[in-house]
Each structure stands twice: as structure tokens, then as C-alpha cells.
Length: 199
Image (cartoon, rainbow, N blue to C red; front, top):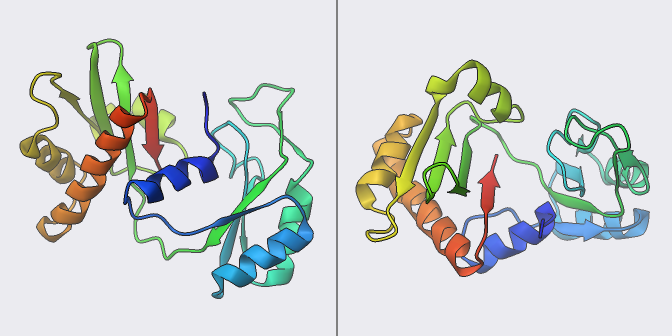
């Protein structure tokens, strides 16, 4: 079962993983209410469809006024989102997710997945995060760091350090990174997931 971003973020919040608080909307007035609840000067309006590459396809917009939030929500709801993953038929967008805008210092990719090759659960991370992680894996594989977790030993602290320093985190960021990794692992195991990713 695939989850929409807003459903995945609800799970993240439940498991104590730091997550911006957002709201879904299915029409213009719900979008306005969501933006007012969030407050602040900048919002992100995101089309909810089971595909990557939403931003490049017009499914992610930055809004600087509540009027813009409403406008983008109205444009997205009912659209057919066509990305490199959907094929030419695309996918319908019935709901948008609105969350506060963030100051982005750098982009990092992090996932935990069922690694069928190694027959283990693995974490994959890259300092070259952002929208094109598949392209990074293809063109610059040295920028992808991976750890396989032994079913007998479980996730070990030294593995978390390997990932953190592999993607260039500072020592003072290790504690927060460790919390995120450990809680993602628990979420993954508790819910019998096959893939959880944060971009």
C-alpha cells in the first residue's frame, strides 16, 4: 500500500520524528483555512499523488500570500499530474497538502528499505539530496552511502555515525540525526514497511 505524503507525515509525527505540521485541502476554502492555521509568511502547496518528481511537473508551489495558496490549490485539485514515473496517462490530484515554508540550508536524502539484493533492511543516505536522487545514483554513485542492518544485531550506533559522517553532518548534528534514524527504523519495523524516504 502506497501512502500519500500527508499520511506518511502523520505517521512521522506519531513516531516523534521532527516534521512540519501541515493540513490537507480539497478545495479553495479549505486551503485558506489550512494556511491561516499554519500562519507565517510562506507556505508550500503540494499535490498529493503517488509519484516522485511532483515539483518538476507543477505539483509543488511556493506561496507567499494566502491568495496564492488558494490559487495554487485550485489549480492542482482536479489536475492530472504527469511525471517521469506516471507515464503519459498521469495520476489525478484530489487533495493538496499545505505546510509552512522552510529555510533550506542543504538538501539530504534518507531512506530505509527492504534491500532484496542483500536480503536485509538497509539505510541509504546522500548529501546530494533533492528531487533527482535517481540521477545522483546513476551519475555519482560515490555520493550515496548505504548500511545494511543485521537481523540479529539490529541498528547499531556505529552505523548511524557512518551514515552521518558519510553525508557530511557535523558532530553536533549527530544526536538529532540519530534520533531520526532510530525512530524511522522503529516505524519501518512496526508497520512492516518496504520503503520510507525523506527528501
